[in-house]
Image (tube, rainbow, N blue to C red; front, side, top):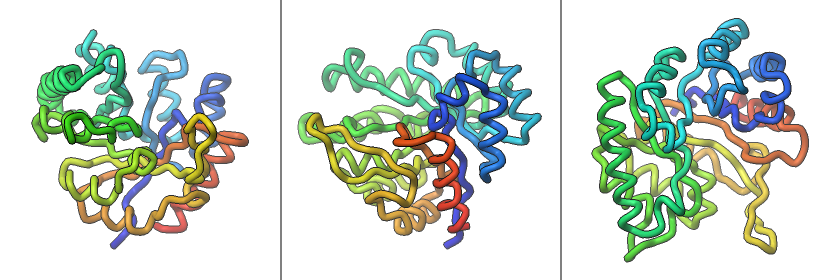
Length: 254
């Protein structure tokens, strides 16, 4: 199957964006990314940030939106989404203290369902991005399944982070197939497979770690995924160099 289009989650190069967003974004473009996922606007308004992206020739495809922002002022979130011309909004994290138990996860999922229904009216699909802890079980059920079982598919989709699923002990292929048609966005990141004494993992450039990518790419192409989004939570060296290495890996498969 053909390779899906890919983008860069700009959280990967947040240190450079904080110092000089225009220079950092120009380097992202030069290394081969034409599309990006937004995570913050480097202290600028949505209009200012969009203008920079336009000048450089980077097209945003989605935006991470904190749960507090989504539930606090959804109208403001919608305004920013329209400024960027986006079809996807992604909640990047849920956990304690908001979700200390199953009831907390269900309540949060129902809140996301309501927000997703409103966003759907605006032509935006709401997604939820997992980490490893959503693959812990409560009463025998993955937390991730609890979330999606208490929100309608048309109101809440998955941005499956394949690496974090693997870290959490799940098979990303199985999860993608389980939610086939409900996973428009997939995060592509890699890690060494080892953990330190505190259980933390070491992230590396895509293709340099333990993840088996070709089956994941094939499954994504057959399950209705629209975008593969490169992300590296932490880099051992320069984050822009890491992003460039991952870009070369992805471009070699197009």
